[in-house]
Image (cartoon, rainbow, N blue to C red; front, top):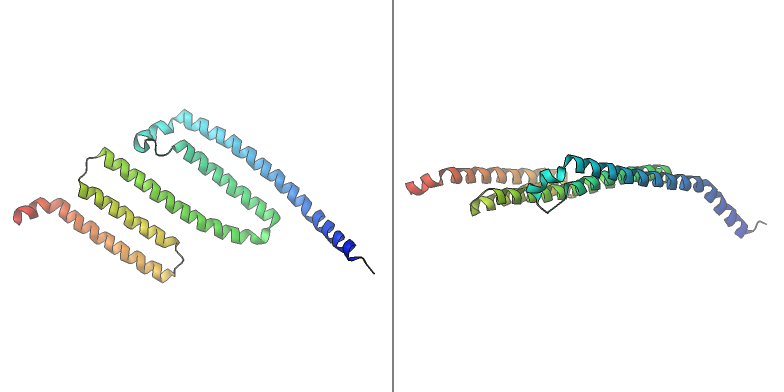
Amino acid sequence: MENPVLEALQLTLEELAFYLPKILFSIGILVVYVLIALITTKIVRKTIRFLKIDEIFKPFLKETISISDLMVFFVNLGLALLAMYTLTSILLPEYLHALTSIIEYVGRIVSIVFIIFFTFILLNSIVERVRMETKMKGFMLLMTLFITLILIIDVTAVSEEVKASLTWGISLGLGLAIGVFAAWYFFHEYLRKAG
């Protein structure tokens, strides 16, 4: 009669022998990606400093965000995703499809947040540089919120029919709002005199 403790120990050693090369190989790949990230970050920062990209965008963004930091962040994020894909394909290849779906969904959310953030920074920069009426500022903010709402609807977990209906309705409202505002903006003096 075989000893159950010895059987369990034997199974553990077999699994360890099976997974150990993969784990060591994955650690090696992770170290390589970290070194690549460090070298790439230095190269990108030197290139940005040489091209003076921060100085080009400084009048528009002021101290809100650093373009160099943003570019370095996206480069490192891309390398991190690549490393994650590589490690998953080695250690857990059966979860590769699930990982792809998760990254796609998170990527859509992050891209929408980035677009909203960038739009508000751009809008704020335009408002500060160009003297606008209060109504014009409010209208631009309203348009930004409408467009933001369409982007948010795109990533929500509702059916395609509901998404299409909501997007169509908001787009129609957006078009009508632009038309009404344009009519008021260009003809309000004439309408005031006529009234």
